[in-house]
Every structure is written in structure tokens, then in C-alpha cells.
Length: 315
Image (tube, rainbow, N blue to C red; front, side):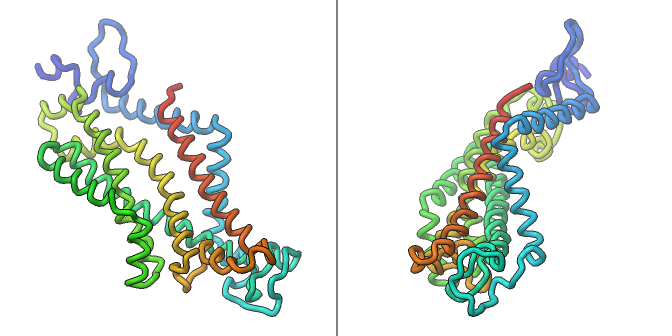
């Protein structure tokens, strides 16, 4: 009890200062669990309010939401099978084929719709893997420090200097071009930035008063990391993850454009690969898949910028 009175913390190790709660003059700087939860709820509402006041970020969110709906309902939205060939070869956009057809008579609109699912799968799947690895490595390195920190950071730098695109070229050339191999490969090479960012966040948070008070009253180290430090350190990591999704989509499109994509599925990069020799005679074959990639990456960048502004600003 004496420790709590001296430090101004309650039984959970939280302070009014650390949670942003106002304290009347002359009153003890303590905060209950209920007050803390109300404060965190208010902060989340404030984040969405700040995000919604940015037209560009909202526009990016609407574009991404539309793409996700298209990816989920691709079988219902596409009027034709993306692999169905016909005699309608290299037809320009028309009422029968909204975006025209390719050199095999396949409907380009149906192919782009189904390619949305593959591109988002690669982007989101690889970033989820990378983010999980980065959180574990960066969180442990920043929280434990010392020799563990040095070893994990040298390990991170080893992965960081590897050129992921050329590594992907080599691996896919040797072991095949499965879409799941691409997801795994990108996930295992994209985590370094997340690890370094989270480590920096944890290093700045582990010496805060509420963390020190939690140690004094006997809270387990793992609980301090998971309950008190990581929630405050994750916002910039989430923002970076949004950027990485766009980067992963671009890398997959580049690999597919070079002919290393998975031919068993339809992706925007493979559509661009097939359109190389028809750029002058059938512009729509390359223009519309390229536009889809541009809109997706642009939407993710707008969302990331909006999230960054919303986290950094205060109402």
C-alpha cells in the first residue's frame, strides 16, 4: 500500500498521466481500471474521428473496401470464367465484354475481378506473416535488451541486406512458382522493418512510470509486455503494415510479369505478362490490369497516411 501511495499507481500499475486522464489539483494521481478502459475507448473513438476528417484517407478506405467485396464475391460478380476461351479475340471494350478480351478470347473484366482475390491474398497474407515475426523479434529485443537485443538485431540486419526481389527470382526458379510459396517467401523477408520499428517503440515505453510501477508490485514480465507495452507500441506498426501490403502486391505483380507467377490462378501481373506483345494493337489488355494495381497501391498508401496522421494528432 505504501508503494502505491508513493508512486501514485493503483493495483494494476496504471497512472493518470500515462493514460492521458485529467486529475484535479490536490487529488492523488491514481486511476481505476474502469476509468482506464473509458480513456482507451475515447482514444479509439478519437482516432476514427480524426481519420474520418481526411477525405483522401476515407477515399482510400472506400476503394479498398470495394476491392475486398469484389475479391470475396468474385464468382458472383464475374460474368465469365477467367479461363474460358472463345473466338472473340482481342475485342475492345463493349457491352458484351466490359473491358474487352485478350488474345485467347478470355473476358478481361472477369480475369481482373478474379485477380483481385489473388493480389489481396498475396499482400495481406505475406504481411500478416511478416508482422507476426516482426512483433515477436522486435518486442523481445526491445523489452529484454542486452545480449538478446544484440543477437536479434544482427539477425534482423542479416535478413535486411538480402535483396528480396532477386531472392524471390532465385527461389521461384528453383522450387516452382506456387502462389503460396510467394506468400511465404515475402512474409519471411518483409518482417525486418516491423521488427526494428517495434523495437524502437518498446525501448521508449519500457522505462515509463506505469511500467516501472507494474514491476514494483510484482506483475510478470510477460504480462507487462503483452498488456502494457505492446498495445501502445502497435499503432505505427499497423500503419507500416498497410504500406507493406501495397509493396507485396507490387512484388507479386513484378514476379508474375516476368513469367514467375502461378499459372493455376489469375493475377494482375500475369495479365500484364500476357499483354506485353499487344501493347500497341490492344491497349486495354495492359491498361486495365495496370490501373487495378495502381488503384490498389494508391488506396493502401492513402490509408497508411491517414492512419499516421490520426495516430499523431490529438483532438
